[in-house]
Structure formats: structure tokens, C-alpha cells
Image 1 (cartoon, helix red, strand yellow):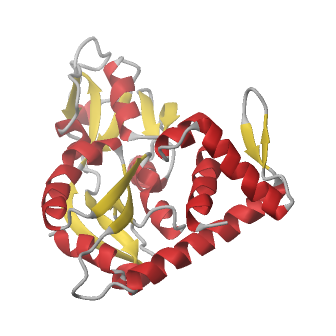
Image 2: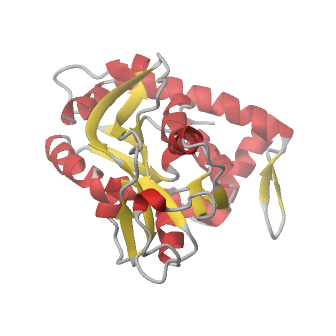
Length: 290
């Protein structure tokens, strides 16, 4: 059992899909199945339950995933520590960010980074922005582009890239309150499309409490892009970072409105585990961001 096999297993344990895992790892599904079978034979335990519809980890698979994750992290840290000042930096960094960050923040960083460190491969994972810090804390990503939490764990280092306000957005046409001044909108009756958790939701909930309003929550969704799309469909009002609205990749029939008091802005930057800042690869990326 080698490090490559462990990485295949870990990728499959995250995706729980042989076809998707084979694409991500650039290996045929049959070869992936043989690798997993080899690990199971070596352990004498079945690690996955599979049928025509789904793949799930067995109890032994869950335990082995914890072991494989620790071994993979130790291998990565050791290989990075062996790099000296005269060695051309090469290897892989896993980076997590939202779709919006992919096309609004990441390009300018990667252009400079790739020019200086062409042998470092970036393994990019996208998902809900609210899960960015957790992905770093739990070791699923080396680096994340994230909004800085109100309370940042002492184990996490954060470097700001930009700041963006949180704004209310409403349908630009055929909205029930289009002719109502912003300070007179009956927010208790307005259908609201809100993030389901984390920083943005806490700030929105605090804003409504300050005004002694119980919001009429129409939908709770993961991802700012989903909020923008639902408001565009005329399903209600929403709250997103201004950066998401300004850098939207598609045209929308949506407009921002001013509210009083305004919501506190986001500080957006990169975060890493503090103990891993000594890694030459992570340190190189960290120092590339200004």
C-alpha cells in the first residue's frame, strides 16, 4: 500500500462516486476498482458498500479514512520539510474557495503565483463559501479563500485580500415593493432568501433582531450564487456580498437597495493552519498574496 493508493482511497471516500473519482484522479474506473480491491485485500476488510445506485463507507472504511488522512498529511509535511532553499519548489497545494472567488479573486493571485512557481500544482475545490475555514481546519484543504469569521480560531492564520459590504438585493421589476421607499419596506412580510448558516446568516439575523423583526424566510440555501439566482427569479429578497453582485458571471434582473443600518462588511482573504505556514509550498502562496 503506497501513498498514491491512499490518495485514491481518500478521494473516493470524499466523492463516494467511482466515475467522478476516476476523472479527478485521471485513472480508469476499472483501474480504480482494482486499487481499492487491493487495499481491501491487504486489510482483510471491506471498505465500501456499493450497488447500482450509491457508494457508502463501511464502519471499517470510516476508520481507515481517518488513518489514511493522517498518513497522507504526515507524508506531505515530511516531503515539504525536506525541501531546501536551493530546491525548485514543486508539489501540490489544495485550495478551496467559492465559485465567485474563482473568477473574481483567484485569477490575479494565480497568474503571479504560477509565473513564479510553475512546478507547484494547484488542486482547486469549489463549494459553499461558509465552509471555507472549516475545510482548512479539518485538513481537507491546505489553503482557502474565505470571509474572516467574527471569532477566528487561534490555530488559523488569515491574510486579508479585500473587503466587501453585505447588501440587500431585490427583483428589479414586478416586485411588490418597488415603489416603497427603502426605509418603509415592511420587512416582516417580504419573502427572504437567506444563507442557511455561518457568518452571513448571523449578521442578517442580528440586523433583523435590532429592528425587532421576525423575517419571513422563504428559503435557506447554501451559496451566494443560489441566492442571486432565486432573487432573479422573483422569489423574494436576499442578502449577498457586494463582490458577488458586482462580479456575477450572468446578467440578472436584480438591484441592490440601501438599508439602515447597513450590515457589517466582510473581510475576504486567505486562511491556512498556522502550524503549516512553515511548509515551503504554503509559505510561497501566503507570501504571494498582498
